[in-house]
Image (tube, rainbow, N blue to C red):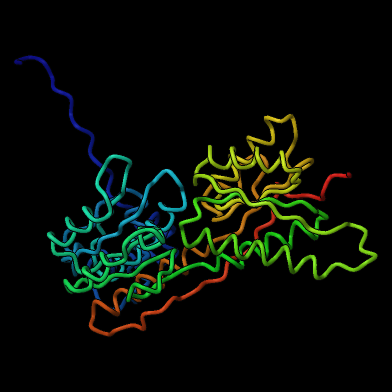
Length: 356
């Protein structure tokens, strides 16, 4: 309307070389060379500068927006468990570093299935697909779907859940070792009745965790001497859902069985375990020790800070991307399982067993 001044949209401030240089941990001269598209900058350094632009909220100059080398699908089961976004972030960053455009596909209850998502990706001409904790990890699922995908000429790699009936490269953490180091830690703290709260038995990582847990209990009892005085180790296993509520339900049953320590199949389940302990009027770790699995972001800041078995996300995700790109570039990789070692991270949710 005439005579009425219109609001002026805010103008984004220009990118400051000093801010970008500080974020990327390089010199301002290096930032200038990258922004002006000049040569003489290492690829890794160039990626750090571009990442700094993204983190600080600056748009990349048009000259730096390179054409995508192709689309790569990333199929994951959900985003509510923070370990899956953690994997997705590393995988997407690695793909972007090689010029590929990641396409994130998330399954939701009542939404698209893994098969439907794969069909949509293939129809869009993806160059390859990364599967994270998909149907390949479910022993009741038909592995023929992956054989058909390979027959369509789409390279893919599978993370978490080895299946010998699928001809493809796999990347996995050593789930059995995760259980063993958790049991050893709790036994060193004097715990005698130790519980394991894990997901449904049909999943490969679950079966491996259970096998490692049971073997660790046997091994600890074999190490005992007649004058040990602490008594034999008793292990209890409860299968439930991979969720906070599942961890809570399983832990309630383990407490009824007399367990003073609970090893969980995920950090989310461990949060449920802590809730179950507190509902009994008990404390963590004073009365019951709790160990998670994954070491997902922010877990160190829970109350109490969670002792957990760290899944080597960065190493696994990077290996998966590099392996997939080898396949995409026509360099076949051995169709086997690449296993990565987990690490115990001790924080405040484990302590010496309470006196009998």
